[in-house]
Image 1: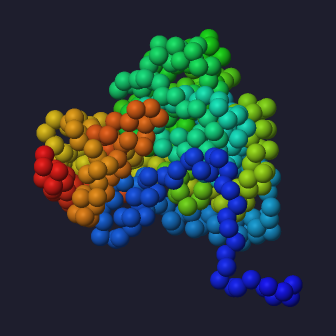
Image 2 (image 1 turned 135 degrees about the horizontal axis):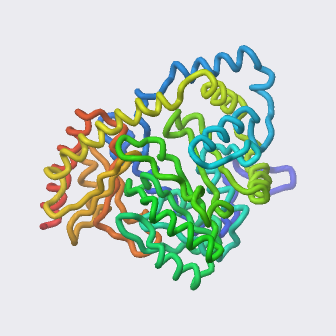
Image 3 (image 1 turned 90 degrees about the vertical axis):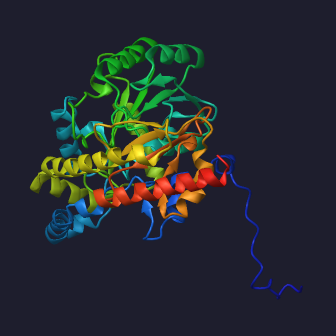
Length: 411
């Protein structure tokens, strides 16, 4: 080839070597399942998708219209990394009313609460650092910590969540950077950590110098029982807990609005990490959310959504005994979006899934939610996306699929 000639147009450059974190961290099994089951005829119990017909589309649209009509230059301009002052103030007020005194300066607005996890991982974790998690654990948290190169260790627990004695033993032995927990309507199990257990976890944190990341995306979606105070409000944990929140489950996930509440030095470190990631969360979305909070009654809207979700949970619970194999057990959440089921010994829900999907229904196998040894007989079901009638039909299909898979496997 002479100096004036060029390479053929169809010759592609070879990919540069991927970073170790990109090579070692897999994709989300939930996202992979959603891609496979995107057909409209599939009743999808796999995704954690809020019911779209319950979005306050009119109220949100009005908030955007008002913001763009009254302050278009500000709404369409760059903003501060920490977030729009009006939204930070509103979030601080909502947090304070719920029992945790908070100033606007304590809040960093993030592009979804998932970004808050990524920012904390960037600010706090070195490759090889230990992070303690629940078992099972929110899948995207495992991804975020794994992508940072952390060593993730599961804390033993029971139906009430983390075992405080086992937690203390691991803190002493492993010297972790932090503990991550979703104590209210946990993803994937739907369980809620009782107040006494939260106080015990906070006491361990204060005595052993443990930092806690408390993720609360579902806490407002309660349809029975009494609200349990945040771990962040417990003695011993007040000055060493980062509290995460989100509008995804109570307003709309498409807004991509979350936040973290943290001590000043850690908040500043997260803000620097955010500057490197996306500069700031979209201004117009923040201003629209602040306007919605000022003009509308979000608490009344959430109560309406939670009531509908309670009916849908009941519809799923009513059909599980006839759907799952004899000997199966499942949780009964008081709120949130998910329940967790365990089939009898010998079942592998990942191996069963392809046959189930052929019946136009889907769930998430439980194995990927475990940081340690996976329990392959478990699965997660989301009960909020479909109506009660659709849930009944989905459970009928699920039962047929499970029975068909068992026959194929010679069970």
